[in-house]
Length: 151
Image (cartoon, rainbow, N blue to C red; front, top):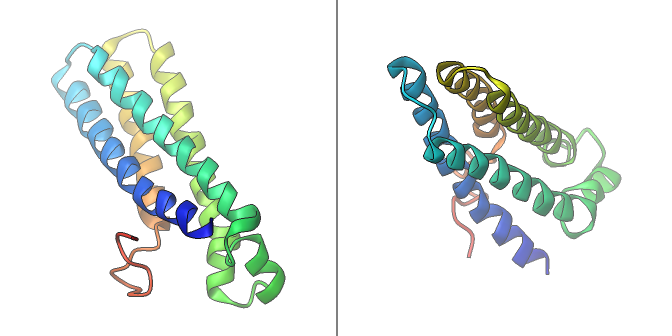
């Protein structure tokens, strides 16, 4: 069961990154080009927020029982172990903050009075959320034990 959830979580990050990059680029282009806020803009912002929360749900399943590095890792190894600390505290805390920022950005853009302001708010909130996600993904580039794709 752990492997299935880990594969879902590992592959889900690519949906988050894809939707996040697209949302940020569309928001920036709309803001700078003073374009109308379209159904496509709304859809990609909903997708980014939705994929973020789906990742949080799968991640919480891993954290609270399935993963040896979530809460179980903290109990077993404590805060002195860098891997246990990363997955037990840093990764989950920052990713939840990123999901909240994406959701707040989605709410803020809906309440904005003009299309330009909608794009600007989306750009700011989604950029910060995406930056946090990029910082907290355990990339396989620096750690070969963490591959980019799990099978």
